[in-house]
Image (cartoon, helix red, strand yellow):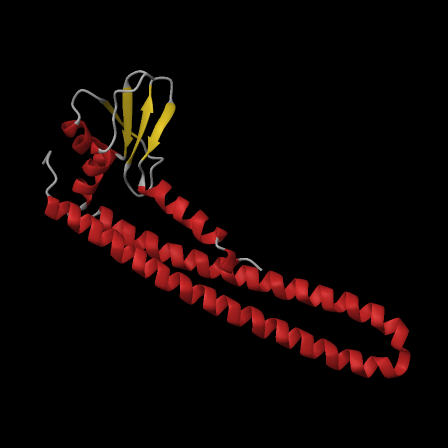
Length: 197
């Protein structure tokens, strides 16, 4: 149990690669769909406004020109807002799907090896004092058995799985939770330039 085989590490690596490929593929689909929606909304907004403006020019060209510019700006703003909301909804749906797959993973056979493998990468001999590992109640005994000389506490603040390593006084040393990794991925995903107007 203490040693993770190369085969197990390969399985975890393969799992991460599959998730990464699916994430990239789904991200590209979301971006393409959002761009198509934005272009369609902008084209419709411009066409509607140009038609309205042409009818109004006959009656009062100068007066309606200013009003038309304001209307275009407002409609573009509303369209942009709708596109942003649509993107946010699609992103939330996308990451909900990923979270559901992660929930399946953490309840599966490979999770324990993944959990202990993430801890094996950490060097607890830091000058900050004695390490304290925070884990989900269901993971506490697994971690405590692997690290009998380290204090392990159960916390409910971790939603999906993984652990946090702190030092006496509550200083966070490493957040190895799946929750944290998912939020980092969401932030990176949302910062991609293709997702901004």
